[in-house]
Image (tube, rainbow, N blue to C red; front, side, top):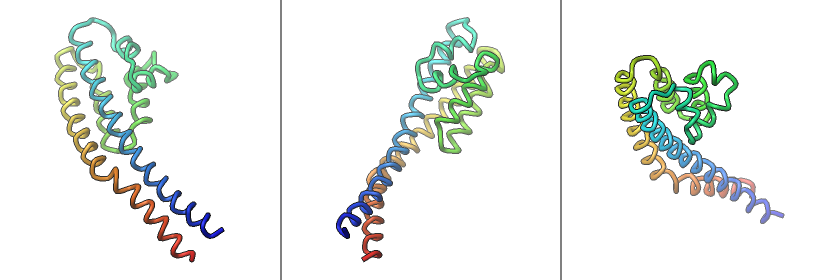
Length: 158
């Protein structure tokens, strides 16, 4: 019985660590997809005369799909895009970027939006670089730390 309990404690710690590593991996993936969305919208705004709602509806990433599922998408596509992004992004800096990104969409002419999207793309690249560094540093740390905490709990129970 003690052996089973100790194995469960170590596994619980390991699962916690793997969960934290998965969150870091998801952050990198979502920021990469946000970077692609910004570039795609920039091209769509520059080379097509389609309304912003149509551009978002035509997108195939998680941000666009989430925005289209929002009940008020047709009334406020930028707000729906923000809410979809805020639901996916967990980091405060990432949510702030998403807020600023969506606030500038449709707020000015095509050139003003292009400038705004270039600034957002630069911020996204910076946050993506930070997220990749954090993932590289901590992807092995969290599972090991979780297993160590599980072992520590087991030792305390003995």
